[in-house]
Length: 245
Ligand SMILES: O=P(O)(O)OC[C@H]1O[C@H](O[C@H]2O[C@H](CO)[C@@H](O)[C@H](O)[C@H]2O)[C@H](O)[C@@H](O)[C@@H]1O
Ligand SMILES: [Mg+2]
Image 1 (spheres, rainbow, N blue to C red):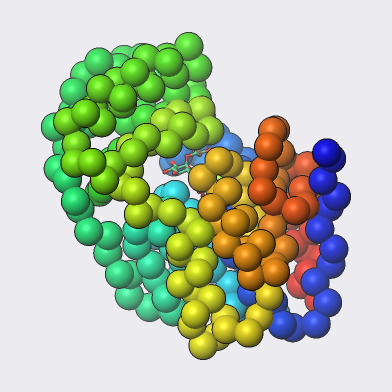
Image 2 (tube, rainbow, N blue to C red):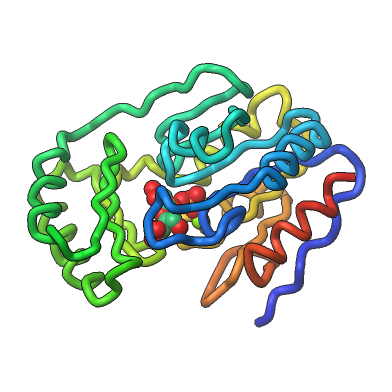
């Protein structure tokens, strides 16, 4: 079934949750190659004001990595799929616990892919293997991560993502992060809206649907729990600009 675009958000009583990569910014061959322009920073600052502060990034990146993208903004954020949080704009970041030492696994995987355009991103308790610049190596990356999983505590899982694969603790779940924000004073009583583009965003859509909110999948390419869709990053930014009023 083709999903319709989301309606415009009338009135102030909304809480906005935003994924970053593939939603607010186009994908790039390397995580550090993503470009954020001044217009996007201005848009996010305006949306934060428009929704009385009830806005948060909900991302697989660390909060520090999100901050680097959007500096000088320090938005409310759930980083590492909800393992770390900044609950107040400009406030301190609650760090993630590190349930396992994955440095040795990261070293081994890096050696295997040395010189082959695969990026191993170390994110504390999460390890991401990016094969966007070497798509033919995705299967091998998944194989290595499956093997690595057998050497980790049982609370680790594998998440196939957008041109890569990640190894992460089970409690790294975007839906839980959204529910946590929705219990905070600035968010409580509002209708939540979440925009995301990837499998890891599906638990976010679930949380939004439970709360009678608006769930929006960007660039849908298969089954999704989202109730609405936007074609791509450009359509997403255009829709967000309209909500600034
Ligand atoms: O939850 P998100 O905000 O969408 O973050 C998901 C992951 O995004 C980044 O990786 C992805 O984007 C990169 C830049 O476009 C791309 O090179 C890579 O192939 C994508 O997987 C980020 O590096 C990860 O840490 C996030 O988990
Ligand atoms: Mg994304």
